[in-house]
Image 1 (tube, rainbow, N blue to C red):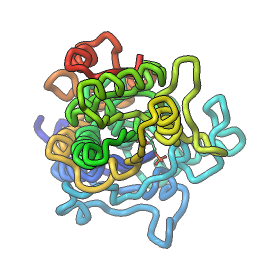
Image 2: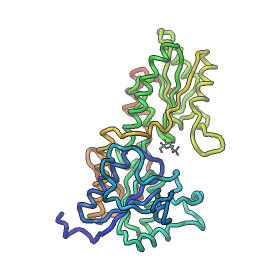
Image 3: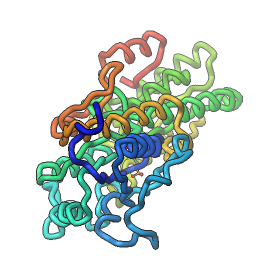
Image 4: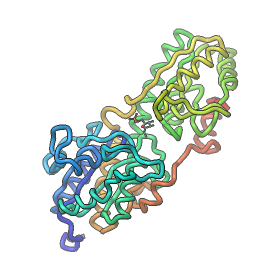
Length: 367
Ligand code: F6P
């Protein structure tokens, strides 16, 4: 489109919220370079919306001019803008159960700050929580374009999110490495991977890494079935077993495992290992991969998807297509309405082709 037909945009802002995912910096770079190419100014907001509501964040200016900050960052993990704890993008008290911020709701102040600063549009990069906030701000009049981010790749509106392939890569490497040591000691190894509500990382890394048992939140397990799989392997003189478990997996009729005193998932591997050891008599050890799945450099797939999302977000601003989220659909990056995009979680289909393939290869899902 010739530049003179672009809507009257002079200055945009970008922020990142919620847990980090490898590829965030690639989105920031692509969006910034595409915006600069349009002659726009690009401000980065530090740590969610904190840099908008505070002149300084962590001793640095709350807003950064991104023009000269995006060189050589495509391969870097984390986010040069920093982020905030999940669900607390404002650095304020957590949300009320109904999704509002009660007396502390800063959304009007945020909108006013955008107007004061002459920021014409916001590119908000975040997971479901951050995108819900972005949608609320859009409904209150802010020009917003969302970019989906989660290593769990569980947003219904997009076929893939950046960071997922990197997480699968890290987990697959770890599972692969465990085989030789598990076999040497004839042990059972339980590997806990991320995935609060969905088992995509467990499924794909478990399949690629040659796990014997894969446990996902979508298929509840029984320890007896897992023990039966281990016994079957023993009978075939396979005296070790590798079990991959998503952190949100649960036993049939049971509840997920939480870190005591927090709302965070955690501890499923240790709980399961004790139960398996009791049921099989085999020494069972655990490995919790944790944040290593999110850290470090994104794999090329994630870099490219993130770059495409960043450029597409600017394209949406160019067209005045606000209140949308960029998404991968098939081979193309498109835009979908934000309101719809954040409601639908994409779960592993227990009857789907990937699960069926794994079962045919002898993988147990503990059911
Ligand atoms: O949402 C992505 C995710 O990786 C989850 O799978 C995991 O439970 C969560 O983030 C952990 O994030 P943090 O510990 O940083 O809050």
